[in-house]
Image 1 (cartoon, rainbow, N blue to C red):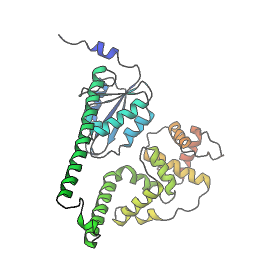
Image 2: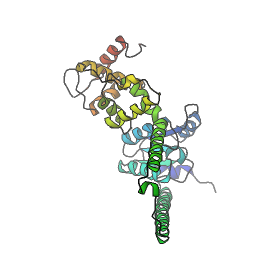
Image 3: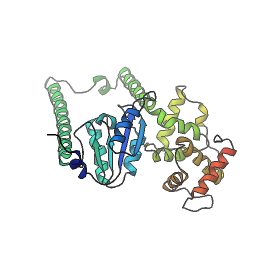
Length: 307
């Protein structure tokens, strides 16, 4: 006998259904996922372009950060959301802490139903078992090596041999460069727009608002590497000139607007308040009109393209 779908949906929370659609490259499209999500009742859909091997997903971080209690985050398949079981569990844990829910249309994971919660617990048990097995394999390997009179690890590193240390350093640099290049499209355009007019502290705060975890020093080091590899102009590393407070605010607002032109004036004002930026008159509450004035100034100065 066919199941009646309304019984299942009647237990679903009355909050919003928020869709999340991700593809790996800019050349791919999210339309197919969006059709399924809208059919499932999602009126709002957040789109993301990012590699499945990376956890750096600013759009996902933003929706998890801003989701309300009772809302449900919906994806077409689990692989659209998470790169691993542990990553999936971390995201669902964050949602649960906000009183929100998670649902995958193609998998038996739906935290609004007992069956879905059971499937999630099974996944958690599998992840815990895998961690335990990996730990046991590592311990067994170390024990076997010691029984044969060998120390675990690279003997060249233990003995501080120059050739082994050089290889290790080269491998670390290569891995660091690979991580930077895999995520550069998420943060480098913002750096290019804001440097050298803004300090590393200003830019790192803007990036953190977009869900990217950068400190000023880590960001400066990353840009230095990018410049050394010829992937960006060395002018990015110039010292930021002292600027009047209103000029600095104009550049900051222009950077926020350029990084996401779809933001409303109110949304930019909210970001400035979260960044604890003072208004041109020294206040703490930003009005959309103040943001518009700064955007208009940025357009007149050539910092932003006029519409």
